[in-house]
Each structure stands twice: as structure tokens, then as C-alpha cells.
Length: 432
Image 1: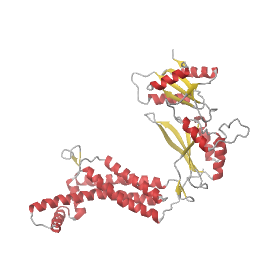
Image 2: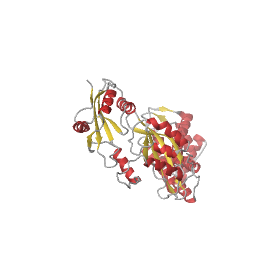
Image 3: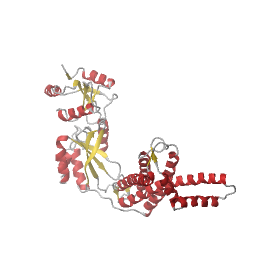
Image 4: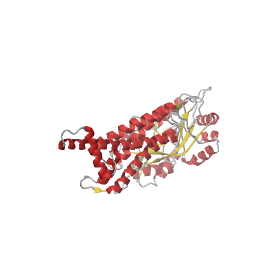
């Protein structure tokens, strides 16, 4: 597979989108942040918030303006960050002038606005050597930024520390926006159809045992052989590889982009993806790959059966992506020897108290059964939060389960426990 690279194109319309979004978004986000800061201002969090808000504006501008040049997008991202932070302090300068003008008016009757502004500039000139906005910034730096729960009791950073602190905040904002903008401009775009590629669609799973071979075949452009290792109906489980495809939504002549990600669970047990390979396929390479994938699907028993279409595959995948109490289940059809082997393997896990095995009733491709192994776990007196997901992953990898099997924990799901117990009739395994 060859890597995807953006065309680096940007039109005059795209530049207009970037410029208007930078100016309007920057001023609006900075001004709003100033209003909120009158009540509360959280260090680090607020700069990150401004960065992500600016990044959101840039994403909209890049996609609407169809900007495929990461360098230009990054440049305007930096500009947006400067405008956000500049307008934040600019709003502070406006408030400072308003407050000072009110005080001057009280002390000196009949003073005009121009005279009031001159007095303020004279004050800043004497204190800092500069007038207007720059003088205000220098004066504020001299006062120093205080960090703490209450400004009066917080630690004052002093003049030099305040300038460094402001630079750090600006860097956080600019880096966040620039990174988001650059990443967005690198997204796949169809030059023929003048459209962004649609979101990646799941096309199948590669089992752990075949993962290394699958990646090697892709690396060597042997797509027909690689497609044979992918199961479009396999359920998503940790340690396996997920394969996704990105295509232009309106053009049939664009080269698809294949993305391979490793599946894992975080400490909370949520499934996460880590990209391990990505590349562009020519249409001929994709056709070979797709043909090999569809050959893994069962055909109907009719004499003139034809390969299944993509829509039916998608429906079958959606049907297998989750297990819930609203699903229908039936008894498993494992042979006695397969059951005995599974029971023997489960006996080596002291954490497993009981296990129930059933099949999910499927509308699409029932010839390829989907099993559900529900376990009741023996919980330790003191255990880590990741104990449960760690055990489930271990069972998925080490047990000799049928190809498509969900392994779930029943300890906190009484409704599912009752359904599996009624369907199975009895536990396939119970620790003595």
C-alpha cells in the first residue's frame, strides 16, 4: 500500500473561509472567555478550552472551504490562536479604560472622552514607557498574575513570570488549534468528485493469530491473499485487528483508503483503537481485496447463488456488534468434545465461578453462528478496577472459543444472567 498524501490545494474560496473564520471566531472566543473570566478563570483548562474551540472553528472552515493544504491550515490555526488570545487581553484593556474613565470623570468634572484617554495614556507612559494596548499589557505584567484559589491570597508570579505564563498560555492555544487544523487538512479528499471522503466504514476483523501475516501481505501488495484472512462478520474483540475503508461518497473512480487498527480495552473496559497501518489502494487492488473478502461469506443454498451485496454485509455486521437483553438467544450447538475442551480450559481460571454458553438468533447469515459466553466472576476482597476487563481479554485470547464469540461478565447484569440461564438450561461450567 502506498501512503495517502494531501494534494496541498487551496482555492480562493477556501482562503476566504479560513480568513473569515479566523477573525470572527478568534474575536468571539476571546471576548466570551473574558466575560467568563470575570467570574472564574482556570489555568491550563481555559487555554485548552480556547484551543479546542478555535480548533472546532478551523475544522468547519477547512471542510467547508475544502482546504487540502496542511501548511496553510496550520498557519491560519496559529493566526486564530493569536486573535483569540489578543482579543482576550483586548477585552481586558477595554474594561480597564472604562473603569479608569469612570474614575477620572468622578474626580475631574467636565473631562471629555479624548482628555480621559490622554490621561490614561499619560499614566501608562509614566508607569511602563508605552501607551495604549502595549502599555496596558506592560502595566498588567508589572502588577503580576496571581495563581491560587483567591487572587488576593494566591502566588504572584511577578513581571517576568507573568510574561512567561502568558507565552505558555498562548503556546497551548496555538499548538492545539494548529494541530487540529493540520490534521483536518490531511483527511482524504477526492479531487475528481470534489468531496471529502466519508467516515471510515467497518469492513471486517482479522483474528490475532493471522494479524502479523495479514499486515505482511498488505505491505507486499498481496491484497487477494490478505482479503482471505479477513472475516466481515467477526465481532470486535481486544487483540484482534479492525479493518476500515474510506471512499468518496459520490465518485466511483477514487482510490479507496484502507486503515488497520489494533483493538484494545482501556482501564475502564471501553474498546479503543490504535492505528497500525494505512494506505491507498488502486481500484484493481481494491477489487481483488473485496472479492477475497466476500468469498469468506456463505452463499445461499440456491443453485444460482451470487455473492452478497455490501448492504447485507453491513446489516449483518450491525446485528453482531452488540449483545443486549432485547436480543433472542438459543441453545448452543457445540459438540460434546468441544464442550469438554472448553470446560477443561475454564477450570484453569480460579476467577470464573460459573459460565453459560448460548447462540444469538441471527437474521443475516445464521450459517455463521454468533456465540455468547457469559461468566460469573469470583471477585477479590481488594482488586483493581481493570480486573474484570483484564480477565475478559485473557479469556478471549486463551480459550479455544468458536471464531465468533462474545465473552461478557454477568456479575452486574441480573437481567442478562436470567436470560442466559433460562436459554442454556444449565451452566456449561461451575467451579466445584
